[in-house]
Image (tube, rainbow, N blue to C red; front, top):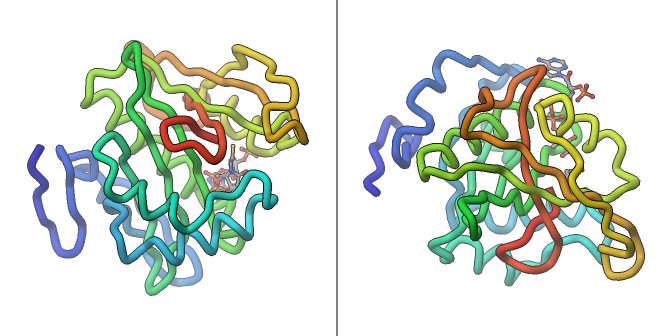
Length: 201
Ligand SMILES: CC(C)(COP(=O)(O)OP(=O)(O)OC[C@H]1O[C@@H](n2cnc3c(N)ncnc32)[C@H](O)[C@@H]1OP(=O)(O)O)[C@@H](O)C(=O)NCCC(=O)NCCS
């Protein structure tokens, strides 16, 4: 797959091609969506460890491995000098794209960045001929579960003690072969922590 450069925005397979149609301004900065890169690793690690409990957060080495794993795709949301958020995806078996994680910096939440990251992730999955998005989410993470349900994801499996035996989880799915892209009223993903290839959603 070749990437096309548009300013500092890499377009793998053109998933960012229509980005200009969606304008998100937060704290006076326009949010740009681009491919995640090695230089993002410290900021991704820092954000992830602020958003998630130690038993669920990924370590620095894992983020470094994400960058070099050909099955993993990272989409970054850049606002000025800040990494406002990011989405990590992994291609899996049976034409399924797993959401390893989605992280949005608290001061940038509730401005549509998460929704846009999911829409781009689903576009990437369709481009790769995936049939479904899959994710795992902590059963106690009500706001994230509502976020996914609003995007069209549905609960497929309850996972007792999924997070290190400390917390239960839900697996959620969205069939994307026919579904619309993530936006208010539709969507889907999947996750499990600590293991590349699985997600936390
Ligand atoms: C879950 C998460 C990724 C959502 O990201 P976000 O950027 O806040 O998502 P959005 O802004 O697109 O949507 C969030 C809410 O803001 C609202 N919203 C969307 N666009 C908006 C806008 N332009 N202005 C104001 N609010 C907006 C949405 O209605 C949505 O409400 P909901 O509670 O009904 O879902 C983010 O909260 C996060 O990083 N949480 C911590 C990490 C986490 O739990 N990740 C998921 C692990 S499974």
